[in-house]
Amino acid sequence: MEVKGKQAQEQKQGVLKRIAGPVVTAVNLDAHMYDVVKVGKEQLMGEVIKIQGDNVIIQVYEDTTGIRPGEPVTNTGLSLSVELGPGLLTSIYDGIQRPLEVLVNKMGNFIQRGVTAPGLSHDKKWTFKPLVKAGDKVEPGAILGEVQETNIVHKIMLPPNAKAGVVKTIKSGDFTIDEIIYVLDDGREYPMIQRWPVRVPRPVREKKNPTIPLITGQRILDGLFPIAKGGTAAIPGPFGSGKTVTQQQLAKWSDAEIVVYIGCGERGNEMTEVLTEFPSLEDPKSGKPLMERTVLIANTSNMPVAAREASVYTGITIAEYFRDMGYDVSLMADSTSRWAEAMREISSRLEEMPGEEGYPAYLAARLSEFYERAGLVETLNGKSGSVSVIGAVSPPGGDFSEPVTQNTLRIVKVFWALDAKLSQRRHFPAINWLNSYSLYLDALHDYYDREVAPDWNKTRSWAMEVLQKEAELQEIVQLVGSDALPESEQVTIEVARMIREIFLQQNAYDAVDTFCDMKKQYDMMKAIKLFADYAYAAQLAGVSPAQILSVKSKNELPQIKFIKDYKPELAKIEKDMDAEFNTLRSAA
Image (cartoon, rainbow, N blue to C red):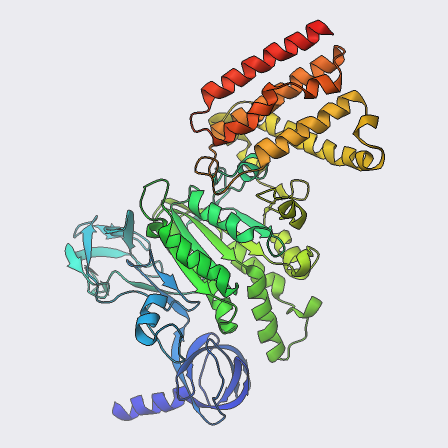
């Protein structure tokens, strides 16, 4: 037996032949695609990405400076996997699920090479409460018990790749994630921990059409360009246009129960801001720290490029795990452009034929694979869960025609186009309402009519028409001035301004305006429409545009955003507006 074991070990060990940055080549290594290997004397973590005859090509997730040909390469025989179980929430990981807090305790503020740390604590004990008993039949994905993790109940499931069986014994009490807590009738034993390969989507019973919106509390998103639970969205925009702030707002206020935030190749200062702010943010739903329902994955731009690709898959696998418990999960990927740049670098090291702008020919396929893992599903245990994926895109110079943005647009159904000109004018969120769109409007139509107001969709369409009409009129205004416009169109310009400044602008740092529920959004939009109806009627009755624009009550409308109990004030404004317009029509 010892001889066989030694031969197997020798067979799994190869030798480094070539090093090209993060891509190395080994020979005499028995390996399969996507096997995790240990490279060099320092045992750097890598993954097999190509096999060409005797050459095994590996992408290394750590800095390869100083390693030399001739050093050993050992195959673990395992795929790149993540540990799934109690302890995920509140954690901050790097791209390959090493907890940053553990790494700091091991080596200080600078991560050294070859250091490994398990994704979950294997010493901490969790209180397990069984939900099934001996003799119960369980299917793959079945929920067997619960652990109270933070304010979220962590559900312990039979792994989805396990066989069905009958529970022979199941324990109750305090256990580590490695201790056996239940045994099936065929003798199979299971702890609380699961391990799952990151490149393999977790199975579901059925994928459904999304019909419920992910409420974000951001008026331009919920009101004009909504995303459904289980949907996909892209936020492209140049530097400084507000991608990170928008994603933080979505993480804080969206009605998803779990948030997974991936900082993929972002600048260190931006990621530091996220890492310092998120633990101090208060969850508006529970009053407890937002981190209690959040998993952060930090992979900054100065970290090895190969780990960027891993970070995206690590994040989506963790999101799928919570989805399988029946939770709605919101995943923020900031940004997929840095992930694509990592793919481009690895591809060039592999000497593959480049596609457009040097990106690999399979760029669109990889982006599709990632976004395809979003969705509203019926899980294996019969529950309904969702993963909504919101990916930031950082096109160089804000050029939306570049390949990453264009390929992303072919896949996602919501496009929130950030505009540098709007951010320069201090209009936030700086989302351009003329370039943005949502393909979920038809799917969500019934929900809005039922849950918000019967005429919600008509009111939204009216607002969009006014904004589009204003864009056409602005070209004329710039040439000849607003006084040259017909009187009705002068009113349209004013109504569009009110929609922009009252409804679309939102202050993320104001305690009240940072979140706006759907009822308030509807009331604000209806108030603007009420002014428009009065204004057009007055104009037809002979009231001049100057008199219409001088109505004082409309100037009080912007304050509604900052008032929590706004309805009495809004009713007073509408009453004053009615009186003022009656006076104008009488005088005409």
